[in-house]
Image 1 (tube, rainbow, N blue to C red):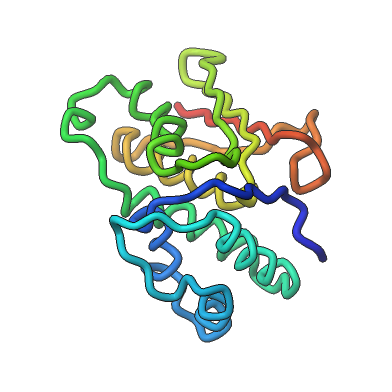
Image 2: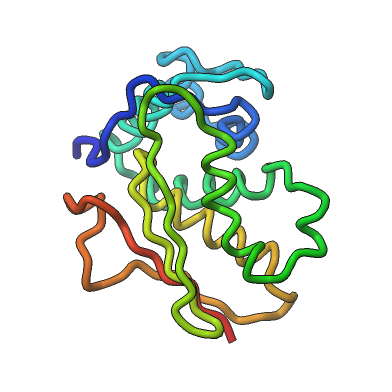
Length: 183
């Protein structure tokens, strides 16, 4: 399968955000792909071309065994490793759950288009995330799952799902819609 997402020439990602691939995925195949594309040794405070990571994901898509699980895990690891402003601990719950968009913007720069997040409150305990980033849908799923797990009160039942009525980027759509619902 070829990589179904777009590239982002000129966009850069901060090494600290991208390093979750190392922190979570150290298999030989993953490390070979990281080396192949020159991103096997990241410095947290340096910037790297987004397209180098897109090439790594494209390699994973060529060998789809466990790709979904790997990408969800990487997304969760990125959230777990992300530096959170200290004031977030006392922020309202919805603000915490909607922080993904701001984190994305903080961790990207350059002349290219790294995409955006639009986050809407649909109900009292229901958020809709609309994304058009060059990153795989399953990794974004991991971000949302990771944020929910990190910030919802312990023991809260929640679900993350793809919107069944809109084709995902993975399926050729222009954007992907996720729903986060909790009890």
